Length: 133
View 1 (spheres, rainbow, N blue to C red):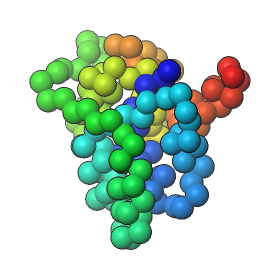
View 2 (cartoon, rainbow, N blue to C red; view 1 turned 60 degrees about the horizontal axis):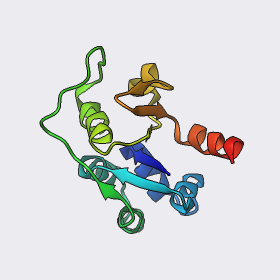
View 3 (cartoon, rainbow, N blue to C red; view 1 turned 180 degrees about the vertical axis):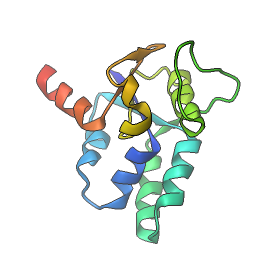
View 4 (spheres, helix red, strand yellow; view 1 turned 90 degrees about the vertical axis):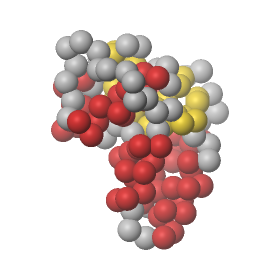
């Protein structure tokens, strides 16, 4: 069973549009979906419509939340300040995968395992599951 940590941009994307393709993540039976209150709030701030925020609230009920404030980034890893809590919470959650669409900031880490957490695009994870099932 995979533990998936979803970044704020994934939460935003799923809540922004009813029927978003990434809803497939919430339909997977053999995964644990995790995120952080930090990511949830970041997604909520960027959603403009009340119905989008309601979708986010509904989706967030099935998430396990992890936040971390005392951990430091692993050696050799650099991220912009706003993304540090995301990676650290994914590590705290003991996630197998950090799913993020943030190519700009997480791009150099895609496909790499950082303290047990592999950083991937959400669509890449879904395609990988199809190939291995």
